[in-house]
Figure 1 (cartoon, rainbow, N blue to C red):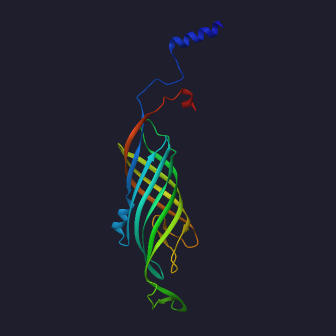
Figure 2: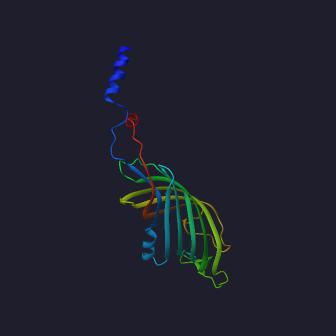
Figure 3: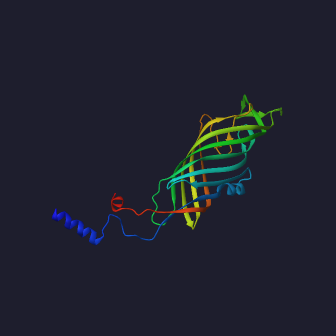
Length: 242
């Protein structure tokens, strides 16, 4: 008993606790981050068959959880072996991101894993096409189709898909972020015309024959609009040791 009382008195005298000494307060920012996908305007400048724009945004719900969305529009002309067509439409993707990165003191970077649900409404315009013929000569297996009754626009098409997203955002300056994502798509459902299949879907990208999977990416610049801040709780010694 005397030994225990002496230890307790010593602890009260020195004021030792299991927390580290207080340092500068570190605030975590909560707010709306908005930006643009840089790859689509750049591609629009370099590729005359493509026009596109995508806006991105996320909102922080907790320390690691974010609501995220992308809203975009695309117009692309595709030349295949037997036909030429133009796809034009809009899309929306919405879901969540989970930040897996443990930031150092004062940093606000993100390495995230996310899920999205995607929806696109679009049209397909068949510009020209040729039909297949078994009368092959010198490796030629197509001929110009004489009729034009199938040419024209097919509108009212839709598609729905799911995405797994791997993302990175780095704070370059205060509240200004550069980012990139890689995405794996799975096409759940799409409506198509009776003339030809959907070989390109805005927001989903190229559709591969015989597969419902696709891939995508973006490179973004975004700005965080802070709404409020929360102070980090002091970490205890045993938390740091673990």
